[in-house]
Image (cartoon, rainbow, N blue to C red; front, side):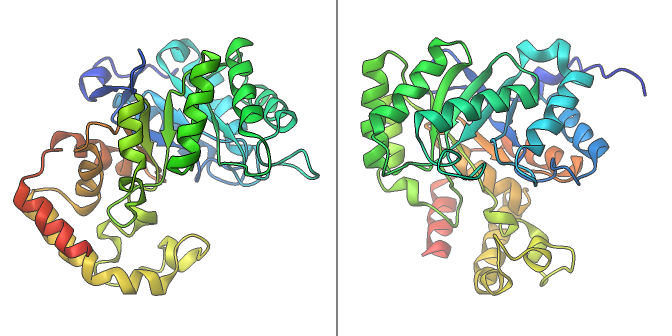
Length: 329
C-alpha cells in the first residue's frame, strides 16, 4: 500500500474555533473512537476513517482508556495507525484520552484517585506510543475522592509533560465550577468540558453552558445524533442492521418508536434547510458560539463526509428555532 499523504487542501475544508480563553483552536467536527476501533473491528476500515477525517481538516481524535472492546484496544489500534500513517503529522494533531470509568480489577482501576489517574495515563501513552497527550480528561466526577486530589493530579500531569491541557467530562455545573476554581488556583486552568448534548438531550442548557461561557472554558459535545436517532435511519421504521436492533445497550427500539413523530417533524425542518437530519442536528449545536466542537462517531467514511457538510450552514432563523423548540416540548 502506498504511503499515506494527507490532502493538501484539508485546512480549507474545516472551520476552527478557539477553545474557551485558551490559545488552542479545535475543528468544529472532531472524531471520537468510542466505537469501531476495538480489537475485533476492521483495522483497514479504522485506518480509512482516520485518514478521511484528517483529509477533511479534522485534526482532533478523541479516545479514552477503556474504549474498545476490550478495554484499551482502541488506543492500541490508534497507536498502530499513528505509527503507520500519521507519525509525520503528530504536531498537526490533537489527541485526547480520559480516565474515570472502570478500567482494571480492584480498587485502583476506577473513579478519580491519584493512584488510578497516574497509572491510567501512563498505560494510555504506552498503548498509543506517545510521549504526551494533548488533552487529558477526568471522565466523570468521583464523589468519594476529594476534588482537590483529582484536580491536583491533573495539574501534576501537565507539569510532568504527560498532557498539554486538561479537561473534564460529565461534570454537573456545581462540581464543574468548584473544579475550575481549584485548577485555576493551581495554575493549570481547565481547557474544555465534554458533556453529552443533542436536540434530544439539552441538560447543559440548565446552567452548564452559561458557566462555561463565563469561565472561558471550551465545550465539546458527544452523542450529537442521540445514538443515531437524529439521522434518517429510523424514519421508515427499524432497519435490521441498526444499533437499536443489533445492540440494545445504548439505544432501545421502544425509545426509537416513542421518538419517531419528533424525528419525522425535525426531518421536515432539515429538508427545508437543504440538510439531512444528522447535518441539522450537528449545525444546531454549532449555532452556539460557546460550543467549540461536536464529537462524532463513524463506522463508514461516508458518515464523516456527511457530518463535515454540517459546518456549511450553522445559522438558524428565529422561525426555525421556534419550530424546533415546539417539536421538542
